[in-house]
Length: 457
Image 1: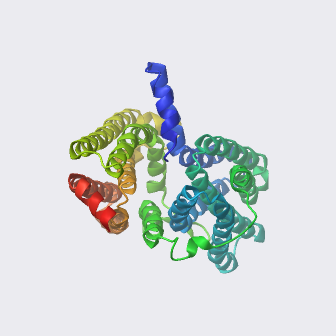
Image 2: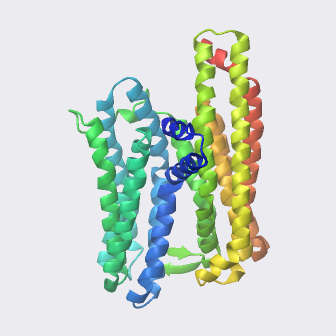
């Protein structure tokens, strides 16, 4: 998210309470806006559409169907997201925006083909009791949503954060509105309304890409050539997104899950608390973005500028110490602010569940999931710092460990019983966060040596 720091610094320079509030609000909306709007949009369609859909169980079928679309699309496009981000950054540094334009279409084509390869067999054989319209709508929705994430990652590389948030706001508002308008058509009407919003969303994200990168070559695939492709980034993108969803998949298809539509399962006892918990990460995401994009990035650039310019060892060490200090302060503030959010949600959890007409039996799991979601914010901050330091191998091991630990711990907690639900996800995140902090300390202590050795090599 490099680049937004300039806007945040400009706001923070006013040194007023309103300026700080504006900066953190701006950062929070940008850093988690698309994810939050996705959750809120699905929940709103479910809540507001209930009076218009008969039978009411179709609302649940819609929510589960769309949740699977989002989960599969994120895991499917995860490898391409990071690889394409790096490709875009490198080509812009080389002043070759034409290659970004043509390869964007290459990535879109491959994403669409992959989504169809997954959805077509399922549509033909896995949903025998569903209408042709439902199957076709699910196939198109998966393809469109997958390409939305590709467009989002490219716009993020262009620093078009306001454009992303504004387009997501309009797109999901349209999804909610159209789904409600078409709710009388039942399940197919809800999905079609959601799809209309997603198509608008994709179009709104694609227009600035065309305005910025339009070039003579429409499609190409240089991204997948050996000189441009980073296999570690492909794996990291896959592992990170799979790690976020693996516990959900396990709960859906264990004894805690129930079949909802076709082969799609859901776990009511697990899904509701975890999605509500994700709504509480906004404060931590705001602090993460502000601290990473102001203090850390500034000292990060100053350190490497000092190395490249041949500054004195004293100056280099001073910049390194300032960078380390900014990392520690940033992580501490993320933990501090997110701890306050956790306490508030602990206090208000019962009220929130009652307002949503949800049993307070979900409260213990909600508390665990709130802590887990907060740890995920810290984990994301650690991964971003390693990316800035170009330690892809460390990120790869951390994300792979996250997948393995989350899977193993989730199986264990299911075997132990309902009192332990959620602790697998939280425990996996706690361990990878601790491992990340330990490795970061070691890497930062030897940063000057590693930097010069990399230059020599």
